Image: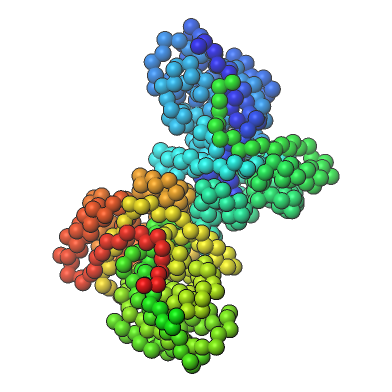
Length: 306
Length: 306
């Protein structure tokens, strides 16, 4: 095998109450990453389609991720990478994570799979470190493993795969405004009331239980973020109006995707998710801000060779 | 049926990272509650064996719990209650919850089961309100439902039953010192760092996942409380020494049971749990403080008619 093409999916991190620990993987929205063996050692990004992103290996998330991987194996050849961006950088649905994940999956395939998907997480995280200054695993984990993932904090991230009920669909609305992750971080308070933290971890536990038991009502009750959303939602125009519309249309719950500006809503069944999408369009269109919407099943597989 | 005898089990609330939301049910350690129909309407506590606790209905947790239940049904007869205390009040393993739970289970049985076990929680909580000033569900829920329970906060508690892996055993050590719940509450800070809260809710999610997947290693990694235990453990003599001994003997993890002074350790298998018990005895005996220890399977059933 001399060349592979990888579909690298978009992902939703944070997931309401699960700030900084939960994420899930979207379907059919993502980047395509073509990885090709080369006689020249090292990594070169030869082409990026669809967006103006740096080609220099050390300035490109995929380049950095693959370099981290190549430090752990001996290989007589190098790699060329082409990225066809399907996810807009800065949209809050794991654009950098997708490119990093897709690149390491492609290189791993061409090397004969020396690493497991879980082992690839650490390499893809190096891409995240370049993108946001911190080596977060909350987007790369679902991009690589699929489904829902939970990341326990620690010196090394401890990533746990959680199941996704079969009828769970996500609706995404991406208001095309600029919202820097650093700004989204800076609105957060460094200390929080213990009482609210208890509510939050009760909801995280309940959400995990709902995922294991296909209990959509419980998932709905648990999708409540009493800590981050009240602070951060002010940065997203018409957030409350959008959320109200999504729930009124039958959505189970939702919130800010990653650090925004995209919003996600989870629904039971594709039809409800589509109703939510229509309600979001109706709600947001009058405001004159450009936006995208889409509906996606939860992708149980993660990045895949196509 | 004119009379029933109920075994009302001891319980562990808080469960490390799951402060105020998680609890689990112990086996064979508990109160016995005898409930008898009477021609005189209302509730009378006729006997309490083993401890000096108030007989007056409104001052007794079981009396208050049954009164709350009787407000919701019409019945031509009353009830007499005898309580044989197997759990020492103030030990931190749900003494008041056991008596409340046992009493409402007995009355419910004599009435022909008008209420489900989940519905009984609200009545038993009235007993907890009398005992501690707050209507907590974290001990009465596992006492009534068995296994592990998670209580989401809200206007009404939202109680979720979680499975318990079959080989999970608890070791309890009860240092016989007085530790008031109010004091244990007062050492807690009202605000906590967001960063630590994130660690905590990651651990709660991971622990719930471990319970569903019988993943003892994950349960072990998740049994970490970075918020409450550092504050509260100073109230329990030789806490760190005991915890270290329990883990060295093979325990998966543990912490303060309820608001103390008892400590719990979870282990995989009865043999390990017994090794933990021996290690705790060896560690605590030299200090000259009276104490009890026991090993218990997780009780999947909760309070039961015997």
